[in-house]
Length: 568
Image (cartoon, rainbow, N blue to C red; front, top):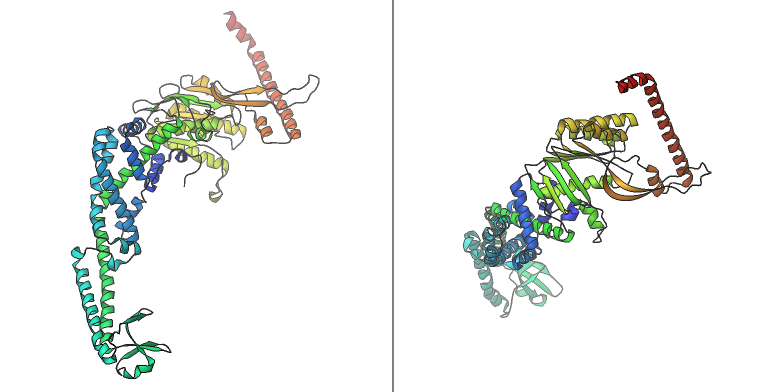
């Protein structure tokens, strides 16, 4: 199932079950080959820009198809019922014929290498389905009657012989009526069938004395009795044996029939795979058209992510067509500033922004257009993320342990060609330990791994890494407006600030995170907010006092040396 607000939810406008499965695979397994990415982009672009009715006709054909992929798989493994086989084979046959009629138009109107390779060979790959469909009796196939399933028995000599044997016995039984009519002196007598018993001779009880003693009574009522003559007993037994044998023969021939179809499995599987790919390309084109996306430049000789006016694909879709989502730029250069440290107030849009960058990279490498005005993305070998907070009770892991386990996994896997996203690493423990772990981890990615990195944090000391590595690190924050509370000058009451989020990525580090603003938005009672604001002010003054004391101590101890250096 598609999760609402997921990337698959945004991209999946497929019309077939097998196209839907392929789209899920595309999202989870982006391409790393530049030529394959470019071919998909060319195909999507042609679908977007073409006014050809041929492509519209092809997409219309896709919307009427059953699950062909699972159907031929069921046939291949001989699990298919006659009903399912008829639906699948008739759909394949009809599709092949309709695509055959579109071939001249496809050859003249389609230029994309990928589209031509998908469409021009598919009709020929579906031809075998027509020959299998021709020998089937539609009514019997739909009802599951295997004894009448094959309308043309020329290819089934065993069934043909068994049918002839059954017809011979039936003629003998019908001819036997002449003898019965003479015995019972009933020239118009016909056999009757009751409760599944066939060829019953029905005699009124008032004249039952004329019934030969060797006849076998099968059933009776107050008015009549029903018999089988010795001849009928013998022939009916023979008929039942032949019918049972026919059913076994039909089952055996049905299995052989499925085997013969299975010989074409790989050919038809390839044709269905082509149709699934077409379905996905149509879907990507529809998304690009509706969302006003751009075609990204993807290159394998550049280690960079450059996005202009990027938007989060899911949030942008949820917000509708009123351009409410605030777009943001991204600039990461592998040989330059490859690390972004992002700070800012809680709920300011930091996590949405880094998700946006990751999703745009995935879309670019799966051959899709992206929600931006322009984008240039180097091919990544992986996108590694550490986001959210949750424990693992079943493995006995705390939230912090889970956090570090995921970080350790990223450290062991990420390369220079990767995108690494770490959201508030170190928040699950004490402040000092958290800062130390976050600082050391981020510095490792900057110095050793050299991956493109987005690092979200509420720890101000981490922003010092821009000063330490100015060529590779940039500080950013999500912009906001600070509205100071209206407090009279003669009161000592402390109020939490009011924040207006701008959701705009801006250069420089944020001084604070303004968590009390989120507490107010969460309807924390005012008395608690006032106490929290007062306590926050006390802690800030305490930190400032300690900092001022250290500066005074430094000046006292080193003042003479500083003056001497300045004098010299």
